Image (tube, rainbow, N blue to C red; front, side, top):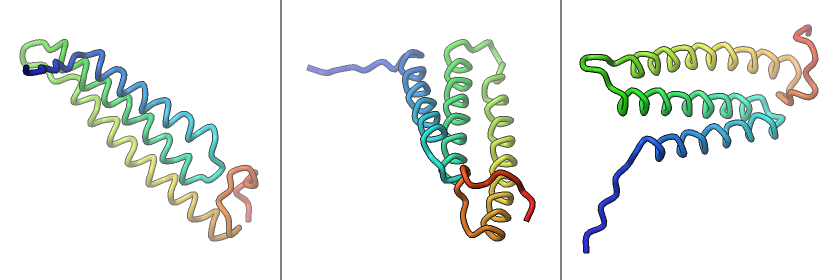
Length: 108
């Protein structure tokens, strides 16, 4: 007996919801700035999964709107990661820790 698994839009939405929840838990429960940044990246990737899945299942002839939006989200995420890591390294250089609860100002 052959078991045929058909992947539908709901499967993608469940995976994206799980990714988003994992990212949200990481953002809310961590004190380390790098772990918070990783959580934000997980949430952005969940949005990308949704964009590409909706584009795949609701495709108009010749339209690639969801994939274009996903590329924009990836570009914004890369810029956000670069700026955030620069800030984190600057704070670590001046305070020798990156605990976000202890950082209340960027003055040295």
